Every structure is written in C-alpha cells, then in structure tokens.
Image (cartoon, rainbow, N blue to C red):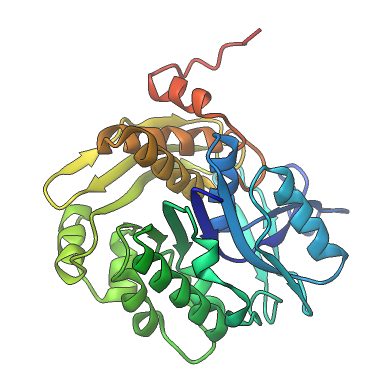
Length: 331
C-alpha cells in the first residue's frame, strides 16, 4: 500500500504552443494535471510510494488522463470512473512583462459529481503515513467537500499525518458554501499547511502584516498544527522570479536559501512540487531545515520543466539543495 495518499481532481491542460496567445494559436498542446496529483506524481518520481484518489469520466478523455498519471508511477488503484466530463484548463505562457494566463472550464465535471460513498478510506489509508489535500477540492462541490472531510477524519483517526495547501480560489466556491464555513473544520485536523498571509485573511479572517505573525495566529486558532509553510516569490518578470521557502514551527521562523529562477520554463505546479518536496524531506530527514531546503530546491527545479508535475529524482533535488545550480552538461 502507499506511503502517501493524495485526493483531488485531475484536469486536461490545453496550452498555446510556445509563447503564443490564444488568438494566435492554431492548435493546443495537451497534458494533464491537478494540484494533489502533481504532488503524488512528484513523490513517485523521487521513489516514494504514492497513491492518488480521484474520479474520471467514463470516456476516452478520462482514460487518457488516468493513463498519463499511471505512467508517472503513482498507485492508480483508487481511480473511479463514472458519467460526466473531464475538467479543462487553458493556458497562455507569458514572457517578460506579459504574465501567463489561465482560463478554467471545470463546471459539472465527473469529479464534482462524485459519490462520497465510493471511497473506503480505512482501506485506502492502510499502511499510509501521510495524506495530502488542497483547498481546491472542497471548493469544487458539496460532495467533494464531504469526501474530503471523510478522508481527513479517517486519516486523523488512523494517526496518518495530514497536510493541506489551503489554496484559496474565490471563483470555485459556487455551491452555496463559503470557504470560511468549510475550511476551518478541515484545517483543524491538519499537521502541516501551506498558507499565505492573503489566504489566512480571505479564509480565516486572520489579518497580519507578515508570515510569522499570521502563522502564530493560525496556530493559536488551530492547536493541532505543527508547521505552517509557504514560498515567498519575488516576481521580476514572467521569466524571472526569486523563490524562498518559509516555515514556522510554533517556536521559530525558518527560511531556506533563495533560488534565482531565470529563465522560467513553466511555473505551473511549482507549489505542488514544493509540497511534495516538504513531504519527502519530512519523511526522510526528520529535520525541518533540511525538509524546507529540499522542498524549495524541488520547486526551483520544477520551474525548469514543462508540464504540471516535477519530473526529477531525489538525487537531482539534493544536488541543487547542496548548492550545485550551475546547470552544466552531464555526461
């Protein structure tokens, strides 16, 4: 059984070739991705047994998306197929002063219409050590929120470590519930969360001027939390960012080395790579400083790779973590 389990929607990504705008493109490149699945796939690439739980439409598009992630090495035995459609998102890749743009088309997807009873979480979490979800999943639909709650409660009961990227997306909350009504109960059982100052204000009405103040208030409100992590991104252009990992463990602030990312090939999935790296580092090192440095190095590498998930080995991440950012040719 899997060491790490993730839960969330997988979508088809349709990207205008190169740096073309939608109005210029005569075709779109296809790949697949989803925040939690990206983390699972990245972990599988690094040698961690990872399973993803999701729902696909029972058609050729759903089967293609399932096959894509099966090839990544994740355990796909908990993929469910049912009537519905595959969620889509469309992307223009920015350059210089022009930012990248994303348009979503995921309404009434098969995942959004899932049946929470389809998942036997006690069985899914057998032998698991870690469960990861994001705030996108309970935002998609009431049934997805119920399934996520079932998963969190079962993982907590079984003593599985729980992480979440709270990942607030205002436009997704369309089924009558607000994030502020749903997310607190889910976050209350988490051990680790990714949360920014903006997310804390938007979801939990916690106002602060800096990350440490926000994290302190979050831990006061949610005493089960052991670590709050995030990245600080300085955006110089669409192709040039600087990235630093942040962590507050209730006692001290930790910052990773800063990575200068230039040129950026594809920044989509950088946060998922960061989370996967932190999970890997937490399982391997049991040292928060090393886990954070590994996570940030993993995210930095993701910015050099096309597609939604991080196709790198743990050894490659460790090489960058140890300071080798030369990019010299390897033979």
